[in-house]
Length: 237
Image 1 (cartoon, helix red, strand yellow):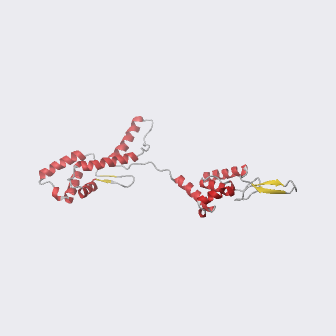
Image 2 (tube, rainbow, N blue to C red):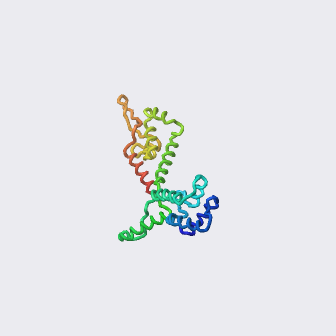
Image 3 (cartoon, rainbow, N blue to C red):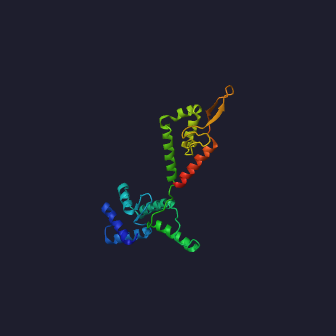
């Protein structure tokens, strides 16, 4: 803060607590010199990436409202030091708009970015949380489980029923993990339709009658088709 900003801050403090205002102009000038010397590197305001901005006037108001002791320059600089430390801990240096092969210019640009943040002239650039893809996958998994009717069956009941309905248990596991489900596509080997398990031919040894039985696992070609379908959907997205 410059002398004008320090003077405004002290006037703000005197309005909130007139009993501690200087008795004369000489005392006021001495106090201004002292505060300016100690708070020259503290900005009047500074932005925070999460909206908890620093404001020296708010620091003064909070101190006067909560402390029985007169406010000192260190009461402001201490809050600023904590704020600056928090902001810098969240900052991830973005790539400067300079030639990276020019080492001196590159380092100078990085230093200028940090200096702007330290003095409250720029907002810290925090690392963005990579949640969009995860959230989308979770939503898709929930939709798939809901389509299977999982919402209506408690998990402990599903776990108990799993040995008696292996195909459905397999589909629920794949949906929860957001993995390709072979039963979402038709089987080109046995002709099983979407949602139906694969079948294999069997011959009755006594009558030679030809029939089919349901398989616990889908045919490999159906697994590959489901994986290819998922890859194609990902490419389009």
